[in-house]
Image 1 (tube, rainbow, N blue to C red):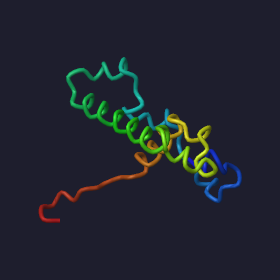
Image 2: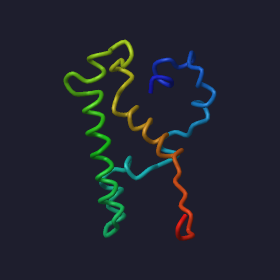
Image 3: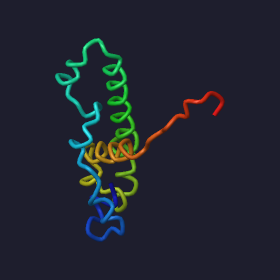
Image 4: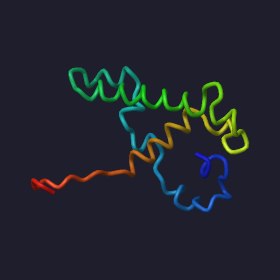
Amino acid sequence: IREKYVLGEKSRWKPYIDVLPEVDEVNPTFTWSDEDLGFLEGSPVIAATQSMQMKLKNEYEALLAGDGALCDQFPDRFPREHFTYENWVWAFTMLFSRAIRLRNLRQGE
């Protein structure tokens, strides 16, 4: 969030950030509306998605939005206008879309 939204053009990571996809290109289910999730009725994906949505909101509130949060303690490093929930979702989406866990199918490895 800091590199993209606070530092922007001055970030040494700008070339990398510029090639990252937008949230709607990744389209993770945790960004879907309840109406869209309804299309998956009967699927365990709904419960998993709702759990992830709650986790994201709770972490954002605890770290950035609540009383005594980082935005209050260190406003020069965590300016509230940039550390929004929308940008929090962007950051998590980028992490989520870049972190891949591959399992070896052979037993014992």
